[in-house]
Length: 115
Image 1 (tube, one colour):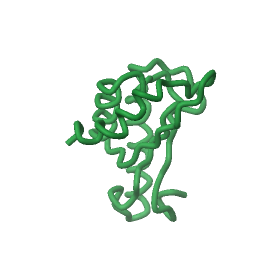
Image 2 (tube, one colour):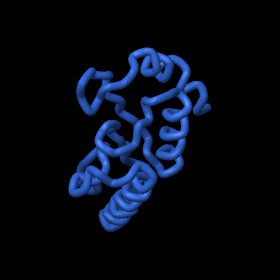
Image 3 (cartoon, one colour):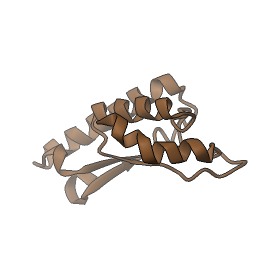
Image 4 (cartoon, one colour):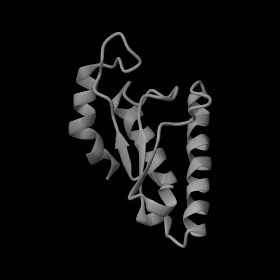
C-alpha cells in the first residue's frame, strides 16, 4: 500500500518479535526497507520518493540513554535510509522512561553532531 499510495512509510521494528536484541534491530529494519524498495520498484516508483520513518521506543535499543547513544543510533538508521526519527517524550515508569536532561540534550545538540 505504501509503495502504491503513500507519501511515507513508518516502522517501529518487528511487531511479531518486539524482543529482538538491540544489536539485531538495524538488520530487521534493513530487511523491511529492502521489501519496501522491492515494492516501490514493482509499482514503478523510486523508493526515495517516500519518507521513511522510524518510531523510537519499540525495540530493545536505548538511544535516549545518552547523547552519544542517540548519535550512534540516528547515524545507523540514517545510513540504512531512514529519513525521519520520532522520539517519544520521556514518561516515567513506562517503556518510554528516560532522563529528561538527556532528552533535552538530544534535542539541542544531537542533530548538530549528526552533521
